[in-house]
Length: 408
Image (cartoon, rainbow, N blue to C red; front, side):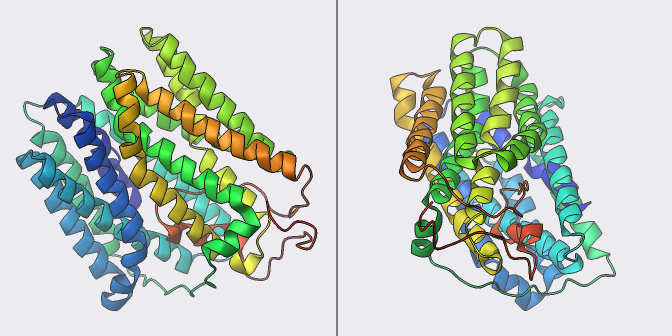
């Protein structure tokens, strides 16, 4: 209930931020810096908030972080200033990461290995359903943008109540083994590149797709467009994941990149047809949202079970870096082609990932991977969520020969 209320509020905040800045005639670089600061806040918060949470207990930490997010959100609505918004969005991202950690560590502590998969599935369903539904807050009638920001703050404040009145305490999870980026790069360089590219692409979808709809004259359909993208990312993850269980995940990644490029070209060609935009956005969401979990699954194929959680944390760092720099890297593409620069950028990112993946396939045509590792959809919230992955169960050892394949 807390995560549903929280995401109902925060899920639309990035969209709303872009809409307000665009209507205040902010340039692309300003929007990029504000967007980048939010994702940088989440990335840093996911690693800096844990000690604070364990020192003052989960409920107090959640209330403190929630209060700061509410205050910063209302401040956004009260005072429009690009420089102050960079700071406010960073604070919101940082504290929001802390709130995610509280909920995810709570779920982890109360779950057991035998039901962890169901807990993660319920968490994912709640998260994506709330995120997609939150986009419709843009359609609430309002005379000033403060109304929407106030509604966002209202949901965030309400999310504190379920945790504040619960009778259950949150156990402290055990710390996983720490592994280095160099170690993981030798094991699965493609997984790191895939997660980074996922961050580069998704951060731009969240931040700039609303501006694109306004630029092409479809500003009235921003809520529907974002809802469609997130819905596609939710619905299509599982069939694509099942395909990656049956075939070489590297080839599936190439197919995902090809599908993303196809959708980007389709939007560029038919952007005047709103119905086709919805179709291509649904498919684009399904492809783009799958890059991260497929890359995670590919990496876990070649990591021992006791290293899965720490490996996923390193992969999240790659995703976080990609998310933080993505909006900034997009800006030069916008100068090349104002309206279509978003999708030229996506095509460029997908071509890099596809090229690197093909290179890995050519260098190592056949891999021996863990037959017990099945695709699991994981949220791009914090590294704490990776511990809910049932593949990280204690005592589960994947079946493969590390001696045959030294780099993947």
